[in-house]
Image (cartoon, rainbow, N blue to C red):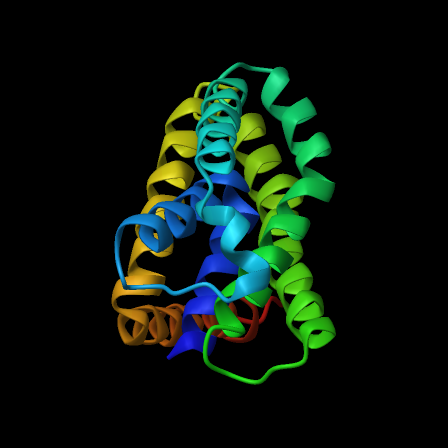
Length: 186
């Protein structure tokens, strides 16, 4: 289950770098749902928790301001994959014996992929089709998804796996219907 949690947390970091880090920090500090190994216990520090709260608030508001949100996405291109790598390595290393380099690489790829889809495909399409009016609701939805996915990844990782399988099946169905079942034109 820890590997599923690691995937969910790093995917969440692709949407918002600081929310899943804050969720892991708070859950590790105040519950037994996640026990961080010695090298990752700094995430439980009040200084780190305070810093993550401040960074979460900055990203929350920066992502709601037109034009600033695009600059924020450019800045986050390095931060979100790094957060995903930290989250994957910290959560996968709780019980499993995954090599740290492999954990970091997987976390980078998962968070980086989610961030790329968000910042290169979804956000520009929303901005273009709504003249920027859809950016704030989409940003709020991304934050809600990041919080929900982060908590569920730790609390009920099997639910995250089921959701991801359903999402993958839906995406495959949608792509096949959109691109392979088009009527031929004369």
